[in-house]
Image (cartoon, rainbow, N blue to C red; front, side, top):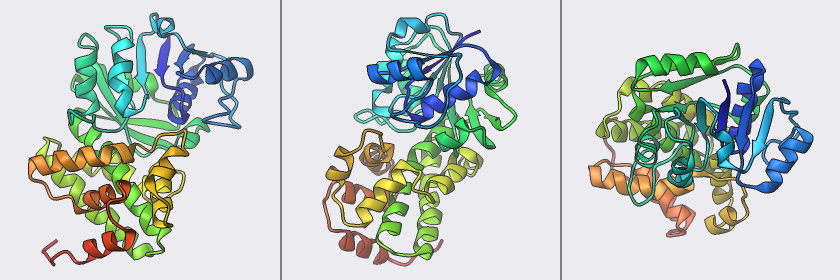
Length: 323
């Protein structure tokens, strides 16, 4: 039995390390040739997860054909590239989606994109509060594994579970995906509050009111409230809204300190998914008749459509309403 991981960023590399914990081989596909060479030569990913020795059973590759003998594929590509990557993956192999976002142009969730790109492959979703470096170090982590096919979900959960990595099974794929996508945008908002020195009261307000937005949108798309209140929703939201280890929080912090979004994004090799999800989420929410003022504010900052002070004032000036 051989697992494959598509995407060798920090999270993909951490998941490869997790899977290699039982000594079985893991194929790690990377787009960048220098990442492939470094992992195979030094057993380390110095670009995305520096300082962490990787298991010798991990073999990096830039050739998707090297995944043909895998019985499980974890897809960890950036959300806006998932369609192309999934379409190149071996057909018929279960796809465990670890990317968080909503596809631009279609407003489709990652599971919906994967089913279109690779219709013969069963699809499940892995989402929750996970910083890659902590998972790679074996620190305690709990996460949601969402799969509509319960038998497949139980099989996948048993396959990836480790003593310090606990997957909790759900059949609410939509809820797990919406939680992961929306929290990225809300993390940018909390980073802005940190960078602008708005205080911890403001951050707590953004988390709670942002969670209300997540819930409204999720319910409108068919998610269950208990999923959104679980690991893949509220749990992930709390984690990413409280630390600069979150790429989205870090991006927001830069915006709050006065930097332009275009400059911050152009200087990054890693992807802050919330910046790409925000306008897609805004448009999908408007189409569904769902109010998401925090998301609207993040979109304005990312597009440099309004000064920071004006965006903050607009949020604070919203009419008073029942909670």
